[in-house]
Image (cartoon, protein in one colour):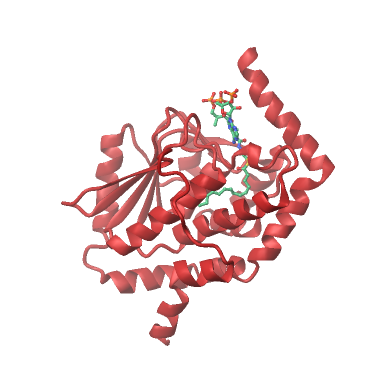
Length: 289
Ligand SMILES: CC/C=C\C/C=C\C/C=C\C/C=C/C(=O)SCCNC(=O)CCNC(=O)[C@H](O)C(C)(C)COP(=O)(O)OP(=O)(O)OC[C@H]1O[C@@H](n2cnc3c(N)ncnc32)[C@H](O)[C@@H]1OP(=O)(O)O
């Protein structure tokens, strides 16, 4: 195997960004949408999604996430723990206001490309990744979690890919990330029913790896996970992961612009807009009851 070609092919940021003529520029330093805390002693970085109230995923959040991932690659961190700093919610998924009502083509295209970019950087990161699911993780929240290598979750929350009931078809690379975590039949059922699982159910079918009771326990379990790689040369570990995930990554890399177009066409269909609109209204109305 030609390792130098492989490394070049895995040079995540520049090759993929330049292909789409987009470059990272921190969009929201003042908003502090992502908090990063690197422990100098252990080399572990804790990355907290911080878009109040429910970490809905906006264009600005995706841009900042990509910037953070680039920084962590440069810093050569030993591992990353991804969590939320919002109460009770890991992430509520894509920001519905990016999808409804009828987004402009320009904004949507940028939104989708940065969302793809976030997934590519997370899914192919050279360092080990743990999702500490410290709140509900529907849809895009679940995608963040399944793109990490290991999942810890607090009890009594919900996780799953509820795109279908919201009128959205999860894209193929999202389905591939789920298939990488769950055996085929459970993955398909989860996607087609759009059912959200509670923590215990998610553990029982293998969607998450461990249930933890608090943050301290989560950090201790994460440390144990990172320690399993301490005697493995970093480059060999990273390349093994990237080669193992290569088919999933290539599926998106080869189809970035058609993926964005297809999703936009789907979102702009009047029936889809109607379903998302009534779903969004029901979210708002829930509060009034
Ligand atoms: C690395 C790659 C990462 C990500 C990949 C992403 C996507 C993957 C690909 C495919 C398509 C994905 C599609 C989606 O993600 S569509 C979004 C689907 N999300 C949901 O269905 C969740 C909806 N929200 C909830 O169920 C609840 O809000 C939640 C359980 C999360 C929290 O409940 P809580 O009672 O604590 O808060 P609320 O009062 O409900 O919400 C507060 C406030 O926020 C608004 N809200 C909630 N979710 C969203 C959202 N996703 N987008 C925009 N706004 C949202 C909610 O309406 C409230 O507003 P207000 O009434 O004005 O205070």
